[in-house]
Each structure stands twice: as structure tokens, then as C-alpha cells.
Amino acid sequence: MLSGPFLDKNWIGQNPDYNSSDIVMLGLPFDGTVTNRSGSRFAPQQIRFASWGLEDYSPYFDKHLDDCNFHDAGDLEFPIGNTVASLDLIEKNVEEIYKDGKRVFGIGGEHLVTLPEIKALSKFYKDFAIIHFDAHTDLRDEYLGQKLSHSAVIKHSAEIAGFENLKQIGIRSGLKEEFDIMRKYNTLVHEYSELDCIKDKPVFITVDLDVLDTSIIPGTGTPEAGGFTFNELLGWFRYLKDFNIIGADVVELAPDYDASGASTAVAAKVIRELLMVM
Figure (cartoon, rainbow, N blue to C red):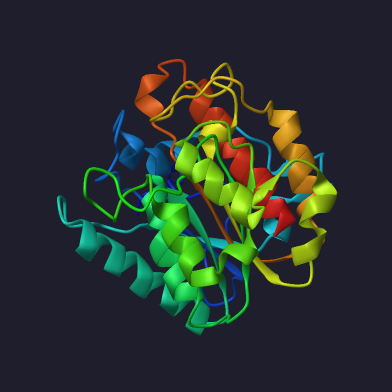
């Protein structure tokens, strides 16, 4: 009989029992439609290892990770090269999580993984909001003729939830037509209080890590200068702690573009704090 000790490959502080958990962390290592620098498929596992460099206590929220009662289910295995089948697999698994009365916390992977999560959610919630942290609008209808693209993920997600239920934060890059959509539906938010109109609704939070400045996270597929500091992002999380958060994801870390490992460490801490909010 081996006596160890052994290195745990799951997220620090997770509840090893799925049945008694409230939140299910689901690794989504898919980057089949990335339009710039691929590699986000490697993020979920590297973030797991980086999590062991964190404390399980958040001084920002005065909580421990085990207070969050989340179970790390590991990574889904995708058929390489088949976008439709990969998205269907995400939707099916997220649907099972909600059938079991739990909430999902997805770790990408590219941003397109959010769309099947939203599709699954829509089967359980008829009027819910999406809060979208990102550098980019992601409001294209298609990219190079492909509707299933990380560049179009929020457009198609908002078509499900309703553009009146979409709030976008940190956006600083996109086509003029995409900014026109944001102006038309008043989706772009600059002040915390602008979120109050959706406070009574169930909310899904999606965080593209390039919302943070490139000086903080250079390891991402489409780095964009002019972004948030970590503390600025944390300020939004603090404001959201009293919202009815029904699910979340954190996407678009491409860890191999930052050999120092700092981007992955920051991603792990973003995830820790967002778990505290849920």
C-alpha cells in the first residue's frame, strides 16, 4: 500500500464529493476557433497546479475556499477539430449540473465555451442576465464566415438572454458596428451602480482575462493594452457579492505565452475571488 504524500491535481480547497457540493468547477480545454494566438486549451490544468500556490483564505472577502463548497470535476475531453461536437458536450454536461441543483464554474479555454453554458442555463432560467468582463466586444455575427467563433460568442449569447439583459465591462476593442450595438442596447457599463437594474435577476458572469491589462496578464490569446488592474477587477467582484449569481466562467488564459507563470498565477487568483462571490 503506497503511503504518499501525493500531489493533488484538483483545485485547492475543493470538495471531493460531487453530490454534496453546491458549485461544480468544469475544465473546458477548447480553443478551436481562436483568431490570434492559440493555446488556451492548456489553461485549465495549469491553473489547477497554480492554485496550490495560493492560500485558501481570501482576505478580500474573509472567506476560505471550503466555505464555497465547490467540486472540481476535472476537464471535459473534446474531439479535436470538431467544434459543434465539443460545444454540444459542454451544453450536455452543464445541463446535468443544473439538473442536479448545482451551479457551474467553467474554466476555459477560449471564450466560445460560454455559449453552450448559456444555452444550458436558458433551459432552467427564463429571465437571466449576463455580465461580461472583456477587452473585446465579441459582438460580431460571424468571423470569416463562421458564426461559432469566440469573436461572436456574446452576440449569440445575448440573442438567447436578451440584449436588455447584457452588461459589458472593460470593453476597449472591437468593430464600429459592435460599438453601435453596445450603444443601441446600452450594454457598456462604467459605474457599479449601472448594474443595479439587473440585481433582482439571476446573473451569469463571464470573465475574459484580457479585461486585465497586458502588463498583468500577457499570457492571453489577444492581449489588449489599456486594461484593468487586478484591484479594479476585484472592486467589481466586491460589488457583485450580493447579486444572485447562478454561474460563472473564466476564459482565455494562454499560459505558454508567459514563461514566468505570472499570468497563470493571476488567473488562479481571479478564480479564487470569483468563487468567493458565488
